[in-house]
Length: 433
Image 1 (tube, rainbow, N blue to C red):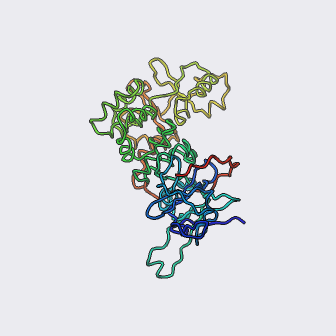
Image 2 (cartoon, one colour; image 1 turned 60 degrees about the horizontal axis):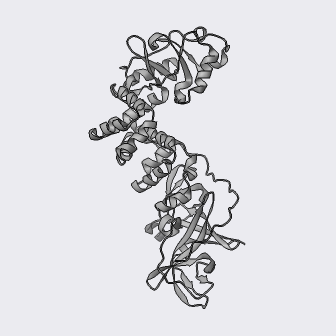
Image 3 (cartoon, rainbow, N blue to C red; image 1 turned 90 degrees about the horizontal axis):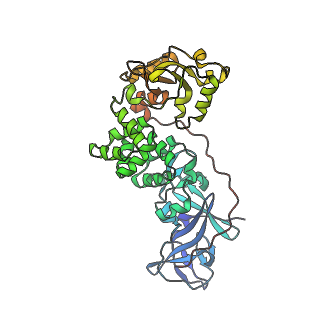
C-alpha cells in the first residue's frame, strides 16, 4: 500500500544512519519538476553539526514522521549547494503562494503531501487552507486541510533557474489573457515578475495580457521595463490600447518609446493620441474591413477570412467604401453568410448605417449601440470618410464604473485537474554535493 507523509511533519525529524545513530535533522526536501507528471523527490537536505548537507534519495531507506532512516551510516559532509533546476519544498513552496489554475487565483501552500509509489517518493498534493490562528486553536478549532492535486497548480517558486525546467508555458498557457491580467493585479512584485517571464515566451499573449490590465497596473508593469522592451509590447497591442498605454507613461519616456515603435504602429498611435481618449476618435480601431461598391458577397467573405490581422470584434461587419474611403454602407457577417454568394454588396448592405464623428462622447456611442443593437460603429470625418471603427468591448471597458471592476468575480467551475500522462523515464539523479 502506498504511504503518505506531510512535509510539516517531516521538518526537523531526526535523520538516523544505518548504524542507528542520529546524524542530524531534516531541513528540506529536494524535488525535480517533470512537466505534467508529479515532481520526483531526488534528495534531502539535512542539518548536520551546524551545516546543511545533501542526502541523495537512493541513500534514504525510510521516510517517516518519527525518523528518517538512511541505508548507510556514512554521510557526505560537504556543504549543500543547490543545483540548477532543483526545487526545495520548504524554501520554495511551503508558505509561498501558488497559482490555482482552475479557480484562477493565488493561494498559499500551507502543507505538502508526499506519497511513496513503489520505491520512489513524489509530491502529490498541496494543502491551501489557512490553519486557525492561536486563539482559534485555544478554542479547540481543528484545522481542516484542503488537500488538492498538485496538477491543479502552477508554482511560483521564486527560483529563476528552475523556470527553464518548468517549460515556457506550463499550466499558465491554459489561461485566458484576462485571467492572467487578474493574477498580475493580485500578485506581489516578485510573483508578477515570474508570471510575466512565463507570458513573455509568447509575445502575442503578452500583448493581449497587457491590453487586459487595469491602467494603473499596466503603467506600473510597463514602467519597470526599458524603452525598447515597452515598444516591443506596444508594437503588438491594438493601436488604441497602445496609445492609451503610451499616454499613461511619464512624459520623459513617451518620445523614446514612440521612436522605438515600428513605423506603421507609430503612425497609428500618433493619430489616436491626437483625439480625446474618451471620445470616439480616441477609442476607435484604425483597421477596418472595407470593400469597394460592386463587390460580391463571395469576395467579401473571402476578404473577411483572410483578414487575420484584424481583431475578431472588428470583423462582425464589412463596410462599403467609395472614393477616398467614403462610407457607402455596411453589412454584417451573418447577413453575408445567409446571402447569395453571387449577389452584389450594394444589394444586401444597409446604405444608411449608423455612424459617429471622432469627437462623439463614449456615452453617446454606448446609447447608439444599445438603441440599434450594434456590435461596431464606424467613425467618419466631416466628409463621411471612414477613420476607424469602435467595437462594443471598447465601449464597455470605457463606461463600466470603476467600482464594478473591483467586484468579486463570478465563481469558476468546480476544481479540475489535468489527466495524468504517461510517466517519463527517470532522468539521472543529481550528483551528491
